[in-house]
Image (cartoon, rainbow, N blue to C red; front, side, top):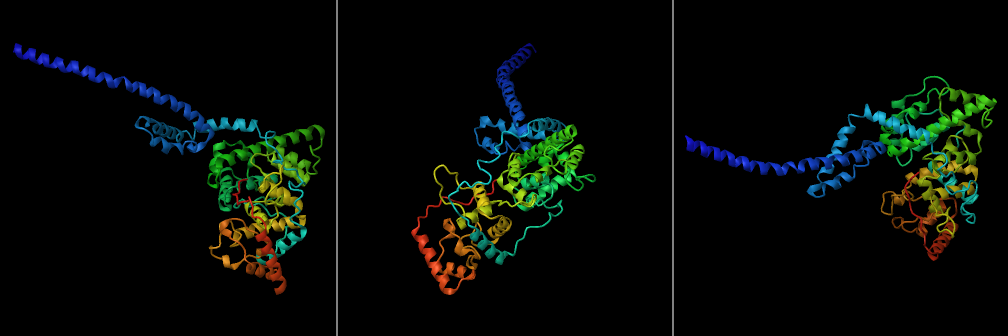
Amino acid sequence: MARTTRASAARTAVPAKRSQPLSSPPLTPVPASRKRSRKPVKVEDTGDINELPHNLATALPTPGADDEADTKVSPPKKRARRATKKEPTEDNDAVKDEEDDDKPVKATPKKTPKKANYGLTPGMSPYPEYLRPTAEECREVTRLLEKVHGKVTSPKAIPPPSLDVSGCGEVPSVLDALIRTRLSANTTNKNSSTAFQGLVKRFGTLSEGIGKGSVDWDAVRRAPQKQVFLAIERGGLADRKSRDIQAILQIAYDEGQERKAAHTSTGEAADGHAAKDVGVEKATQNVLSLDHLHALSTNDAIEKMLTLPGIGPKTASCVALFCLQRPSFAVDTHVFRLCQYLGWVPKTTKKGQPKVDRNTTYSHCDVRIPDEFKYPLHQLLIKHGKVCPRCRAITGQSSAGWEEGCPIEHLVKRHGAKKGGVSVKERKKAIKAAGADEETAEKVAEAEVEAEEEAADGSELSDVPDDD
């Protein structure tokens, strides 16, 4: 019994000695790795959640982290933890954080930092020596396009606002027109309308008072930015647009309160607007409005709109054209492309002149085009740029419908290899369709093609996306 007891005691002592050194090594790195993994999680969370909702800032880097060495497997886990933290806090903690985020937006409206003129001078062309388009050219292009797309006339009255279609400024309210047009930037009409419907569904409309039937813009202004983001999420660029919209609404609110205070103290409206009592009543009811822009000149109204966040020349010009019903030649991507094809802007610029883009095209053509043609040409060039098998941006000589021709074939010089050159036969056909006889059409077509072959082809222009 003694031998057995000693042997068993010796055996039990040996594994006890061995188990201690084996268990100690894995214990030391575990707490160290946990400490290291916790520190970066806290730092990254505070930056990403406050700036971009739905983890937009980290969605792209995540796959890259998975491709790194095995020692860096922890970053994906950190991102997973952030995602799980975001979901339950949308109703409580996130709302509180975003309410805090709203405060700096309200306190710092983008009034002074933004340049109002985009380097352009209202009423002056950036290319004063370039004398195209002429009034005759504008009249002829309008005539030819109306033969194909129908006659265009400016409406005498602005239609009531739709709660289903966002549109591009065709509503009576200036503020409503600006926000609708802002939603339409860089997306399709269907997507912008879906985004606008999201605002209507989430924030509702005013059921009584001066702004009856309009979106409750004051509710949009006071809401957490995340809620506005979710409302317009399907329209594209929702984070940027939601911030711009709330900043515009805050500016409109602040200016309304200032106008109300000025009227209360002096008995007169700040700008002498005839509808001053209506403006004061709107401010009293927290009905946001920018309708006092109706009292300003076209250039002053456009300059004022350009000071608002996210509003560029195209949006301001559209609101002036459709909402204020002022003559203004708004330039979108289709209008810009066709102005280049028609030669209404220079192919190359002189030293010191700005590069030809959509904004300078607007500034130049708005001076050159007579007021009577600004509305119809804007509508016709957009329509033609969307449906013409030759003037659409994505078509080429091998595209379906190319053989159908173009009503302004003899007037355009398309750029881009896929568009190809224009033959004498095609130009002759287009000139005859414009009303010339056989002999005249042939002579003019031959002369134009010969002149083009002799001229240097140094065009620096190209199709660009709509980036307002």
